[in-house]
Length: 282
Image: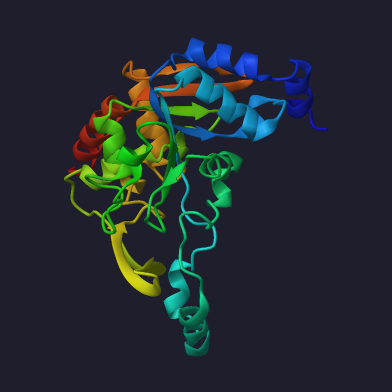
């Protein structure tokens, strides 16, 4: 066991009761609609793991609150599959399973919590294969239903609806560069050089597996070239988030053993759009 793991363990087990206390102290409360990102290992030794974190979050937001996560699709065909040898492409087009909101696993790179939340009884997952989200609570359908096929980070998407509902974003030990909501700011920002991608993925339409073409900002490499603004050693999302914190937005605190952050979604998006348009217009 490394020194960091020993230090976290020395602080004692992180129980549901402790998480509830820490989350409440951070500013999360009853009735909140909150999108959360979690680095579970950063919290320390959580008794019960992912399920305990979800149970604690549900207790804090209560029956009128809603939890939301970004899922993606772990087994989506890679974007570059259309550049592979012809026979490989034919095999994928013929047999790659269609995205299924109920069965397709959340992207493993997002950690354990998105998959755990989407499997909760009553959870609702959005229909978009590449940019899917999941939610649990009374606002779940309002957030998830009819996720636009194109521009899935832009207007009338789960991210836009989170803002409209006065939602929050919670980082539980997750780094600032994981703020998926900032892709919504990228989609909204009116700045030159915005980068887009087009790709194909299989979905089910009227009971049939079909391939559909999608159009979106480049959320993988970045919707803009940020190197002239932040350099090639820093992540633009982290810089935006730190500038927002410096300006007095959001709150910082400790949940379990982890530095955590809570942001007002509307305020963060407004700040980020202004930051992007101001920095990228030269």
